[in-house]
Amino acid sequence: MVDLSVDLQTTLWTVGQAAEAAQVSPNVVHNWRYRGHLKVAGRDRKDRPMFRAIDVIAAEKATRERARRTYQAA
Image (cartoon, rainbow, N blue to C red):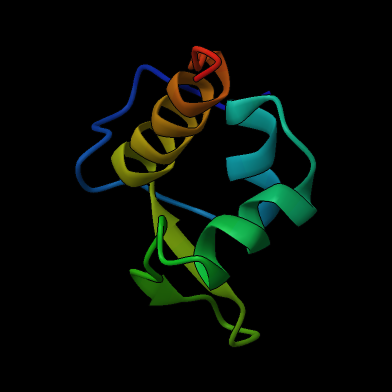
């Protein structure tokens, strides 16, 4: 389980931790990165991308808000 009581501004998460915190699959986190919604903030010892926790939360929130939009028929 991901600890959300840490400093979200400085904490870095792996793809797996970010996915768990946002309750999405790791593929969704990769998609956020490729689409420019999430920037890599560092690399771990194995050169895997790490993301700031606050950025993951912001990307998740924006995704959920876009999904709730409704459009009126013209």
